Image 1: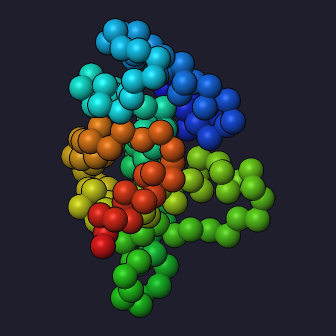
Image 2: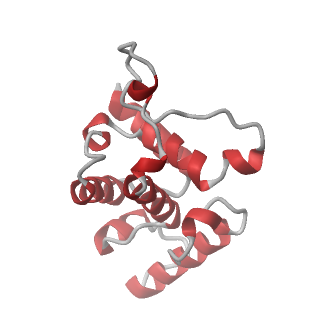
Length: 152
């Protein structure tokens, strides 16, 4: 399921994959069709498809950090977003939803405690996986709202 997920994780068919993943989890745990899977994912330590997409995409950003520029490298003004990755202009929807642009968007919304571990990949990986396992995500918007609530 995780093979190439950074390329197909936002496709409309990914919803079908998530539904199949939930069906498998219910079958493994002997639950009914209407039972919630959120706690089951946490018990088993399995990432949902949206969580797997976020995890793989952010690991791509960390492993290829030389491809991305940080705001503080582009200007000398001390701002709140100086540790964020520079977000280039994108006019095409295909580029906006591509791995490079979405990686920047997801990285910039991370809590500072995780974002500061950019140069320590193993620590970054463990903190990110812990966050994603604690919050079973069914939608990418849930990740945005969770990260925003952690910042305030």
